Length: 114
Ligand code: AMP
Image (cartoon, rainbow, N blue to C red; front, top):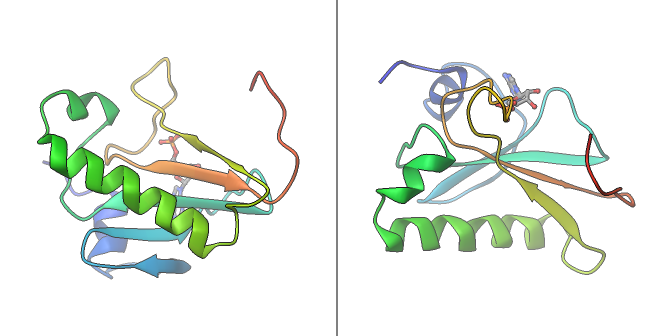
């Protein structure tokens, strides 16, 4: 699997504004934030995209989801709410081939998204 920019952040080869880390996930601020809080949460056990959850162990998927909720709580987003976004593939405008959840909040969001 090709080394992406997120592999390099995970391996501390390039810097990132890390807001949370444990044995399962790394969370860092998006360089192009779309809200006051815009953090990317990646699993340390690499998957390329959301569609890979189809073949992944359900415990790994569940652990990842629960870690995303933990990061949201850590960032103080639980009470007012937030959005979790996964972009998959070309139509989904996925630009980095390492699965990542966008955790977005800190303001009133609108729906539908653009
Ligand atoms: P996606 O379109 O879902 O693949 O989102 C990739 C996200 O990664 C975009 O929101 C980018 O702004 C963000 N991004 C790209 N490079 C970096 C980086 N070095 N550090 C933090 N965020 C990044």
